[in-house]
Length: 190
Image 1 (cartoon, rainbow, N blue to C red):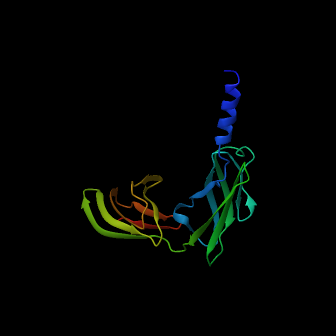
Image 2 (spheres, rainbow, N blue to C red):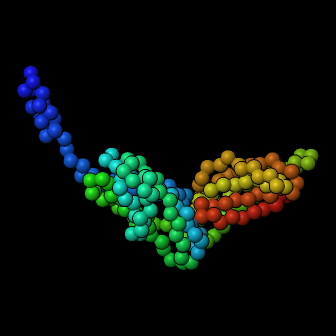
Image 3 (cartoon, helix red, strand yellow):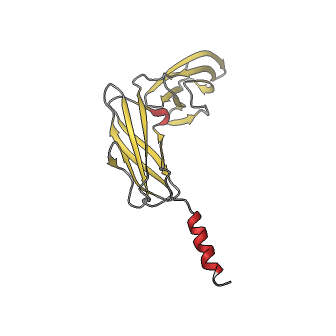
């Protein structure tokens, strides 16, 4: 029996496959890949590999902190300046502990246009207004907020290019819409 145990380990070791799969890498922010031209981009991403991630580079620059190296799932952040015009494409590269390399090209949309607030109907009841409408953007609406004085109340809406909304607000309230690139627009009610 003692002789079989080393043979079993040798057999199992020969069955192990070497890691030849490159790490996965991606961006989670900026939302929808939209950035405002000429502004600083604050981006966040991740890389994953079962054997551990040793390096993450964005356009050739290392962005992985030393505390994250070797972990299976790593998060990274970086900043860069978007050009005033033209197309921005990021090259994300990751390397695992076995030397396998993965790369992904991520295009960013330069979005200089603010979202548009379209009020379709306003109903008055006492000191309150019921406002119905939609917010449109050429890329994606990130959020719509009702501002009353110094208080901000976000509306619970999906993140899409066009979102419908309804809100009950006092006179003088302000609707603020922000798109995925950070462009904003506002409209006073009524």
